[in-house]
Image 1 (cartoon, helix red, strand yellow):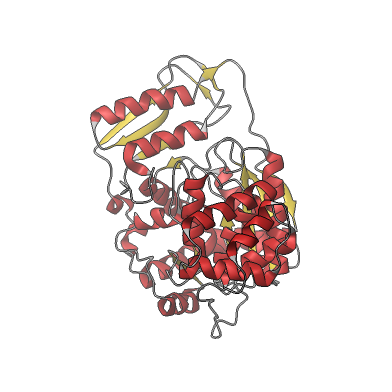
Image 2 (spheres, rainbow, N blue to C red; image 1 turned 90 degrees about the vertical axis):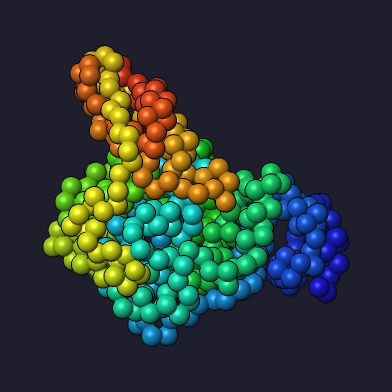
Length: 436
């Protein structure tokens, strides 16, 4: 380390600006351990309190990207575009979106995370598929990408190793809510995938990482600016996470919803967000001239069953059992399934995604700690949404649980999260803003 870290930390503490070489020094110290835990915590707190300029955030992102292996895909001639969501409840979009966009001629190298807290992770959902492997070597990841157009993997230890230590330290030092730190954490991993473009799905609402819309917009703007500074094409959508996405919450249950949506019914909100993000990906890839034609292409591929064929091909290449496409019962089912009944006639006046997300975690379907094991079969399937008319005794939802006691306790909480009243409410716009 050329600069004494304490001097750099003090400059950031006093709201000074660090140059790219100084930031690279700090990040190399994160990886080789020469920057101690106390120093790392102090640096993160200084950034959290004082922020970073766009140039500093870009330098931090690139230094984190370059802390490990940066993939190249010389054999993949298609444009390489990925999508990243800031996460929410019921967000299984990636599982539909990747095969859909791959069917349209775009390569989708997707490195996804696991879930933590009420936010579900794509890797946990995929783990519910019997045999499906997400722990791919980089070489295998590239082969799958080349052969079926998309690959889905958990982050390799070789990708952006600086982020793992910084992320863990942020979690225990009260420095999670910092736009430069969030931006660099997301983009360092995405830029290491070897992509040409990235579409960001930034959620806002009760169950979003950024609850307040103005914070979500700031994050969106930061991500787009830094991604472009790093040399890739960027687009971002601000989408609603004030209600769950789709009807299934819980890993196996969400996979079943996806499998059924491949060539059958798909909840309207899930379909809309998937198509909106997919259209942006096609535009970035240059395979569609405008949003309308991009969307029309995706709708046709979905209707014609091409997306199902691509999904099947990926399933075979990553070790999953393709029979689940014809028989979702192979995913198994929790032993106790209990209906949550409406106690009065009226309309569903709320569907609280944060409360429902916490119920899924408490049933065993999510993690409080990164080391927690997940029960893939537990969760909730919603039968009614905001504004639906119900009669007394109608099933609002079904709880899937490991024990009868857990099912009963969860059903009470689901009823409280889905109150029935006299007012007919409508859900607001799903896509609230577009930044391109």
